[in-house]
Structure formats: structure tokens, C-alpha cells
Image 1 (cartoon, rainbow, N blue to C red):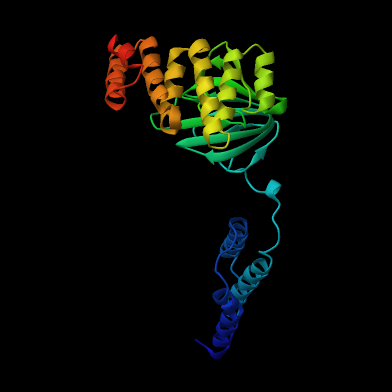
Image 2: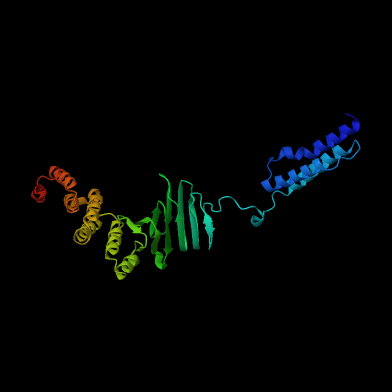
Length: 316
């Protein structure tokens, strides 16, 4: 190498030195520009003269440094190519139809937040308006769930719409398949909505209870009453209130729900533990679960041999 060539090489190394002292990572779009510069120079007509290769390298290095110096400038998202997955966790969507990693598609008229984007679990929270989900049949272990303050709606594969109403009520309508709606609130039972059906989940608060009662949904109004009593501060007053509500459930609701209620109340029934155990067993019998009722009756007699309810359990 001649002395002049050595000088040019050293000059190039000095120009490239800053690249070794800063993180050697360019944003993808800037990498593409640098690569285009290099390719253009590689395929340009070669010029005669010993100094041009070194000068070409120097010019490329200068271009790279100029781009590096600009890499902290804000990017315009509209100028970037669209990602393969248009929805990411935490993205708010308004009036758009977007694909999700599970293969589902959502039509949003309002605002939606993606809590988990999949592919195994998709969780969406409807902030306002409504969302229609087109969900293909999911494999075992996959879940698709739309949440609101009043309910969580989960499916395996269907077309359904969740509409957030004023006062945080949630209306669910199904075009195809069947969905499971879990109302928010202690001990509120799951409700299933099938194709062609519509159901409203009222929030677990006094206003929701009144709205359910006004809409003629006595069962849900009672469920909300139970949830409110369950969420009250612990103590004898709450226990007394829950037992009174249990009696109402026995009289008005189906036996399955009553059995579920008394089973849940049992460990927290305090002085009412004996009655809660008996009423759970009796509800199981009314629900047609005779073997379970007999086993519960035997357990009851072992715990409370002197109870006034023993004779009744023996008749089962």
C-alpha cells in the first residue's frame, strides 16, 4: 500500500470511529437507506484512478454518519409499512375493523382496548359503544373474551355483539353460536346467550338492581341484591342479611342457584353455619342430585347430631 493510500485508509477509519463508540443499531428504515447507498455505489460505473475507491468509501461513511446523527428524529408512523398484526395491547380503536392474532375480527363502533392480543388468549375491554366479534372455532386452550364493568363475555367460536349501555349495563346479542356471560359481582351465576337471543347484564350496584327490576328481570335483580349483601362489611349484620336472602332464593330461584349460594355461604355463615349446611343439602335434593344430597345429609348429621333438621335428612 502506498503512502497516499495509507492516508486515505486512516482518514476513513477516523470517520468511522464514532460508529464504534455509540450503539451500533440503526432503525430499520434508516438501515434500508444506508444499504441503498452502498448498493448504488457498488453498481455505479467504476472510475479510473487510484484515489477514487478510498474517496467512495469515505463518501459512504460520511452518508452513514449523517444518517446516524439523524436517527433520534421522531418518525412519522403513517410513512412506515403497516405491521402484520394491526392490533397491539393497549391500542385504542375507533370505527375500525381489525384482524386479531387468533384469526378473529372485530368491528368497532366506539372504543376498544386490547388487554391481551393472543394468539392463545385474546382479552378485549369495551370502553364505549359496541363491538361485534367474528370468532372462528378456537382450539382447546384458546380463549376469546370481551370485558365491561358489568360482565365478561367468552366464546369458543361465534359471531356476537357486546354493547355498553349508559350506566355501565352491558347488552349481549348473538348472531351465530353461543356465548357465556359472567356478570360482575359475588355469586352472580353465569348466563348463556344463544343465536338469535339478546340479554342485558346490569351492574352490581343499587342503580343496576333498580334497572333490572324495572326491566322485569327479577332474577338478576335478586342476584345483584345478593352480590351487594355479600360485598358489605363482614360481621353479624351481613351474615343475617345473607341468610335472609338465602331464604328468598329458596323461594324464588332455581334449586341449583340456591345450592351454590348456601355452599358459598357455609364457611362464612357464623352462627348460621348449621342452617346453611342443611339448606345446601336440601337444595341439592330439590335440584335432583339425590346421591349428593344424601351424602351432604350424612355429613350434616355427623356435624350436628342434635339438630332439629336431622329427622328431615333421614327421610332422603
